[in-house]
Length: 112
Length: 113
Figure 1 (cartoon, rainbow over the protein chains, first blue to last red):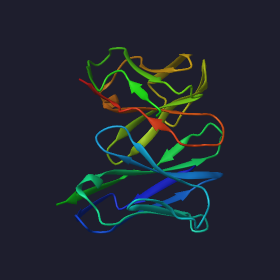
Figure 2 (figure 1 turned 60 degrees about the horizontal axis):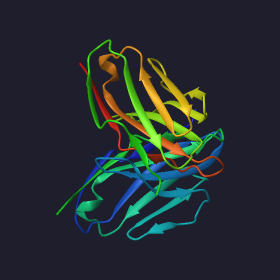
Figure 3 (figure 1 turned 60 degrees about the vertical axis):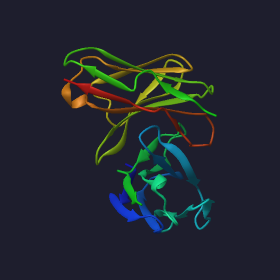
Figure 4 (figure 1 turned 180 degrees about the horizontal axis):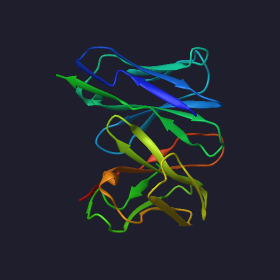
């Protein structure tokens, strides 16, 4: 059974700080790992990672995958209050129907 | 832009009622999913559908059923609602093929009293 564990479960920082969110996984047949951001509405897609060592970047957010050690990290630099959200890590493995296994999520709170 | 629309944002029902949660997507996606989201547990898959009239159980299907009569619409049915089904319900869709990105609706917060 595929498994995803995120850490920390919650994090409180001040604007301007840099944060690193962790996602470790166990999988039978790896297809890809995805990161989502969820504010008080629909989770929105951030990144999809399929290959080790290749950084995906979008503005102040970046993510990288290590398929040997079975983890991924999501970095946010120069945090802003608008970064406050739940960050979800999800694993696509197994069947071709695109089923995702989600971690518990990390609740990030950014104070002014 | 992909749009996934869930019919209600908030719903309050009584124990024993039959509850329908509706989800519509506008991108001709083949695959659709229903999750529930609870604090500390993340998103858990209830059911998914890979084509019209086709469905498969997810990780926690007990107490739920689904219907997909048209490609764009996927319904989640609680046959007899119970208090432990109080939760946030999220619908998602995905195009077929190799891309695993799922697009989510805004969610329905269901309270069963």
